[in-house]
Length: 197
Image (spheres, rainbow, N blue to C red):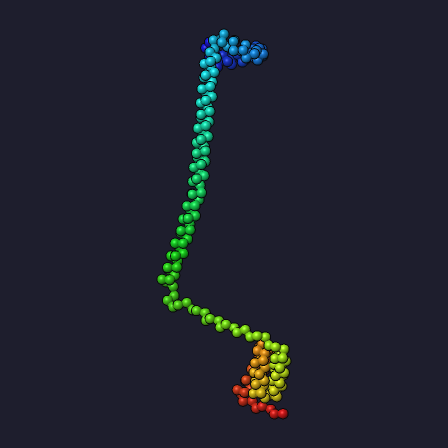
């Protein structure tokens, strides 16, 4: 039996008896449908073989398409990190080259005199803290030094400050002591006469 043309199929769809025909075919068992198709001239074995061939072809196409996709993805995964690394390596190489070039240019065109050096800071000698006895003696000597300065006995004033400094170096840095020392030194330099008691 020849294949129906599209017009024949359309006409058959539009026919009012199509629904009844569909109901009749659906009500049949698979054996009854097979028998009717064979009586109508269809070779079911050939149809099944043709359908199997079409299905196998579709499966192969699907597998090949998926394999190509996986291959593209695999290639993309292996290429992407490498592609990312190359620009990073190039940027680092360029940065190192620029730094070296800048150093060479600075050395060639920079100042001919050597850079100023900072003088080394002398190590500060850590003096042990004064004992309580030394602190009391230093305070007494400083009180005598202030009294001598007030009496304009400049040499005696400085001598007492020096003796106190040996016992308590930290106490000599106080502003009052430093002012009194400066005043005594200036007076000696200017030749002020001392007053005697």
